Length: 192
Image (cartoon, rainbow, N blue to C red; front, side, top):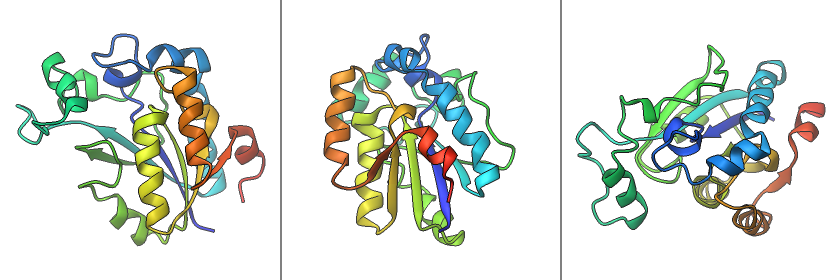
């Protein structure tokens, strides 16, 4: 089954201790999320998974920023998530494969107003392995859309984090109805 690995929002403003809106940074660090993501990304080549890195960001000057969004309102007021700034760079410890596809998104879901669907269809992808921060926001939103677009979806629990462990677990309990919830070692040990 043709598979893509979606690594979502592993960027400075969201999950680095210096990030401007990094509510999930402590949990991501405690859980070792970047190390897990790196193992998955390294395994992608061996397993013939298409590695896709997705980051959230707005055009300079915030011209595409959703003015009425309480969620993204914090980003603008903090000067966060502006494309071309350090905050939208991927986490410095993340090892990005040279053949990875990079997708910028202007909202929570990796599908909304992006070329993700076109990339997946062009590559005949049927299964998405989803990892990212935050479990409660981008992972949940992307998984819901992927499910409704008829992809088989796997969420890598140990490659995700949220602001709190409770928020993370609550999201996973909901996502279990739409996707397989797996540990990275299960996928790396059984890629096909």
